[in-house]
Length: 494
Image (cartoon, rainbow, N blue to C red; front, side):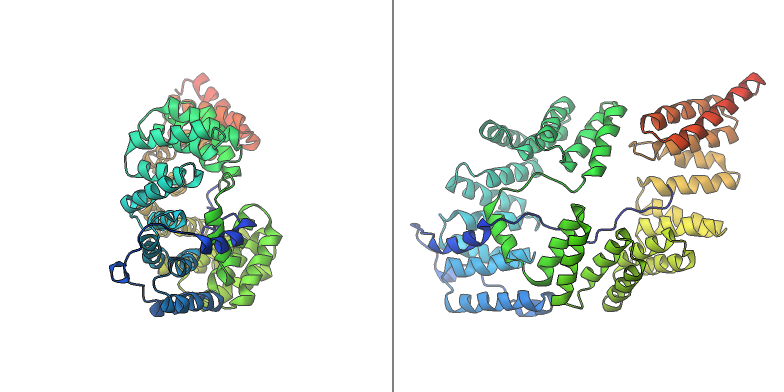
């Protein structure tokens, strides 16, 4: 419970490819525009890509060079501008892609894809007003396109334009009642405005339409928590943990076209991450290895393989790829952290401590590393140093339950139950799978303070939650504690 094992993922991957993707790319060349194109001097400048060369693997850079050379000879070609933008977009260089999409849009203002792509890349750049303008233009050009309507509704919600966002989602649901994403979006609008019954209605519908919709289960769990329904909260948070990265299949040919352009090591890395998140670990291994065939010095691919081999129970390869990753890029603190977790789980505590200290040398604000290092130090009897790391973990992530719990247990061994209670009380909201353990420990701390009535209350709640979640071993410990408290009451101790 106190050794934190979350976080074996390095980067988030894109999902979804379509057989239509390549056709969509080819189809762009047949677009016809009837609007007057902008003059070259009125267009934003083409970004200078030379300083970025080292940021791309060889395969991706070769693609970029071909597209850039074509644009150099055809500066007024919307397709040449857009194709280079798409390649940069596929490689997640949104700042570089934006002016190219804008050039394409200005050259052919009535061509839907350029307006849509322009909106898409502006969102991660934080240019939400500009994204909304681009999505409005795209929606006007293709009135019933579901992806752009969803994108516009979500940007309006992020901009705080609640009424317009609500109306946009309601119109989508009217036209596409089977859209889980639309129900999820409308649920978020209701949640933003404090309408919990409305939020629950639409989050539930989203989960009915796509039962493995992790984000909607999480949102539904929080809504039930805010209504005080702990049982339903736990039900949906359990489902969230089982499908946290899953979402309804994307039906967006234009973004599939972008995906089809992702090439080289980066493409295989993304593919490997998606496969791993789906639980297909051997296929993920193959994808990561293909990334390394293209770019043997891809530190992130090595780091992901190291973490993957923990799951595949191959300790030799865990260490092999860890060593390669940090030799290429010593500054990968998450790689040191993940390797430290592996070492801790396999009992190599001194080496685990060394890896976690390396992670903290690089990123001294990483609360997970502080928590796990504190746990190791506590096991070695270095209580004061352990307390320092638990306090740092709390300082950098105040709502992180485990360092509060670990610190409380240590304080109890030091005869400081009052301070322990203060930390344990901070672990109780929001409830999660650890809450019965936290309550049991809180009861023990209350006993140290001779607060027997409060101890019994905490133990009874812990018993109820442990029984509901089938934590049988913990349930037996709680029942023993309650029997002990009853004995104290019979002796007049309460």
